[in-house]
Image 1 (cartoon, rainbow, N blue to C red):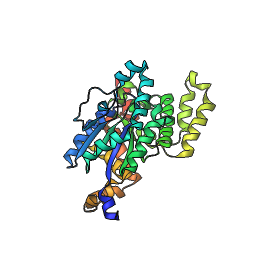
Image 2 (cartoon, rainbow, N blue to C red):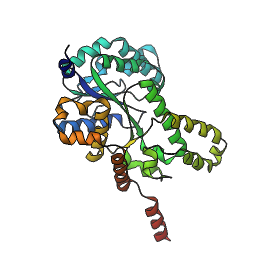
Image 3 (cartoon, rainbow, N blue to C red):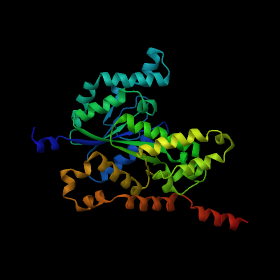
Image 4 (cartoon, rainbow, N blue to C red):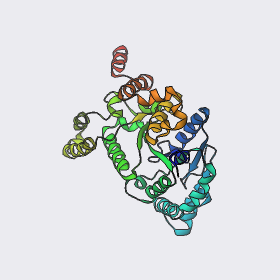
Amino acid sequence: MSEGSKRNSLAFGQVVIGPPGSGKTTYCQGMREFLSRLGRDVAVINLDPANEVLPYPCALDIAELITLPDVMESLKLGPNGGLIYCMEYLEANCDWLQEKLAAFKGHYCLFDCPGQVELYTHHSALKNVFAQLAKWNFRLAAVHLVDSHYCTDPGKFISVLCTSLCTMLHVELPHVNVLSKMDLMEQYGKLAFNLDYYTEVLDLSYLVDHLASDPFFRNYRRLNEKLVGVIEDYSLVSFLPLNVQDKESVRRVLQAVDKANGCSFGDHELRNLEALMSAAVGADFHFTSTLAVQEKYVQSQDKALEEEVMDL
């Protein structure tokens, strides 16, 4: 196959992963609508056998192959064991997936994946399915959603960092970590640091010091120091903030994903000077955009102090 023919046969897309409740299905719905407005042909593929109510038009549903309730009933498995069985069954029947995906040649694909964390940290079935997609000329990026309210709890945020790093190392795809539901974050508490501290994953020793003020975590300081040391040694984890109802926020995430899976460097983008310029923008742009998100959704420490003074 010539280089030009090979390029034309490529399909781009996203595998949307993350823990339960992080907003994967809502993200797929919002990203599908955004991409459609940009003029891209989009196909959303549901790979979650527990996802029975889909808010988006589903191009391909794993329910045609297997469903979690059927597995739980027939094999007497719980939801976790049943979900693992479903993914192993999908891996064993990848030819079914390949045949179904052939109908969406030329589409940008969004794969709505299950929410069981171990599927992305150590179980191999879904990872092997992603590897098969790569062999079928899919150029994918993993979009890992994490609920942004974890930033308000330092202990939970360290746990999120460890899970994100483990997922990146195990899944072995270009990776974009996303803090979802930014508009709801402060309903759960205030941030100890500015938002860019959490998105850029800056010096985590400050987070350990902050945890040390908690009587419970004070006895686990050495453990927390070792955990953040591992995260900092790899220097892989960072996040993009997202409110899926905010089109500018969605655009920034799409820009990062298109760079990760190579879509922004395709033939149709080479004719778009604006796309090339945006692809070349680096850390300064992301820092500025994070400040804009903070001003919109996160109350600054100075403003909070002013309001406390006014209340007095």
